[in-house]
Length: 268
Image (tube, rainbow, N blue to C red; front, side, top):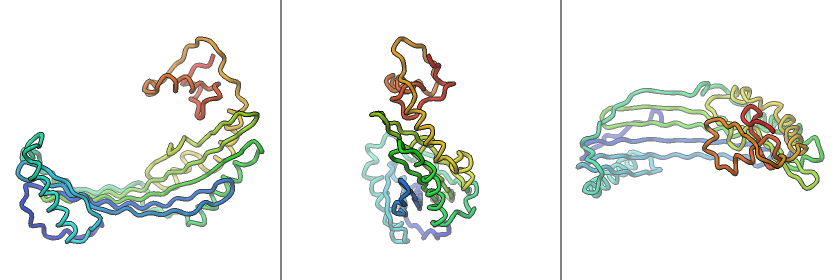
């Protein structure tokens, strides 16, 4: 896709662009010391945009052959002309972008562990998490996703962006005396950053199994929030939460799955 030649486009239009996207994903998981099936996927396609006769149209295709690209552009041009009379503004007044450039995620070419090494790492964290009989469920996993985006325009633009995302995750559920608590490493998809193994190191993924399990047990033993009228201190970004959610986020409230740090909520 990076070096794919663009065929000669003979299209009656004011402007066109092709946005190529290819994403590959590999996901690994170990639950309760049992390796889950390895999952891999590839998503590839092109989106065509055309300005014609004052309208603008779009089309998408998984056929990245020269014939497939031309067909997508012709379909987008058709929709541009059909909808031109209903357009909110005249596409002929829009700029005709011609950006050029290239971006690559930090360490996008850095070597990754083998599949066996990924599972060995997850097995180690899983084994460390299930150390107490009150731990009833636990799972460690990671998804590695790579993506290539390329934008080509009729005005000479050609931009390439290469990404690699690391998405590690770990959760532990503890139960005792009719009370259940789940603790996770930054929540579901709470860690999603560009880079390589340094992302795991940044969040302390190695050795997180035992740490998160101990936090789940601490939540299990925490007393319920006392009744009464209390003052609460919220960070600005937390003001978007519904009030029932705010109520459940007190560090001493056992209904909280991921309590706010003490500096964010003033305990009674």
